[in-house]
Amino acid sequence: MKIILPIILSILLGVAIGASAKNSNHPHNARVGLHGMLLFSDGHSLYASHLPMFHTPHDMQLIVRFELANSVNHNKLRNTLVNSSNYWTLSPERFGLTKLAQNEKGIWQFTADLYSDHFERGGTLELPQQNIIVKDVIFRQQLNRDTPKTAEYIRLTPNGVTRQFYARIIEGKPGVDHLFWINSASSLMQKFSIEGMSTSLSNEEIAHQLNVNPIKVNAYYLEHGDLK
Image (cartoon, rainbow, N blue to C red; front, side, top):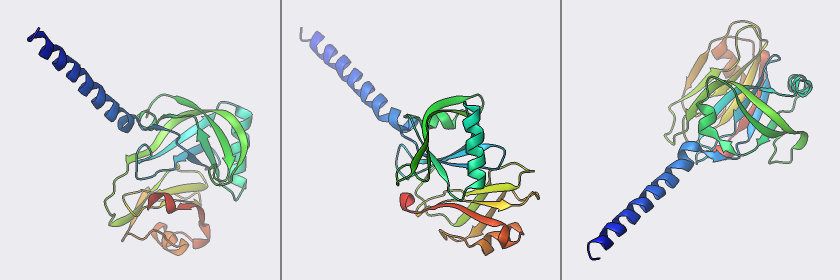
């Protein structure tokens, strides 16, 4: 009995430690939660950009191209996003953000409510319980807290469209979630960066970097509060 008891205790301790490690690793790796997203369109496709924060499960910048399973609503949303001055957001069912980010090929689906304006800040529910079909992962990276040395932007939309969207790559704190679009069908650079950690750029600064007329630069979304 004196020999058996330590063995039993050792087994139970091993099981407990294993379960604890599994539980502690799972939420971080999977990033399961309610992941709100900003919606935009280049006039051809629909895009969604995860609204990030510097804490789990939201510490990932992720931008995808998607479709609505309902083709009528898909076309309605695309046309609305192109012709309205307001942005839209979606509030989805809970899912693992990491799993979605790693799904570069194939199709990932989830259900979401679509709102005009921000779903957590008084937005209006317009299209409830829509089936979202993710077609491509455009950009992904895990956030870190290191202070950035440059403000870097990446083009999200393909060549040939007249609404060319750019997003700021969120390098560290203080961060800013910034999207703008250029009204031009000309081929524009894929990336550009500006020295310094400025959390805002003027239309003139952006136009200078992209060699376009400032009148072609259009603000779309700018958020500082969630990334302090």
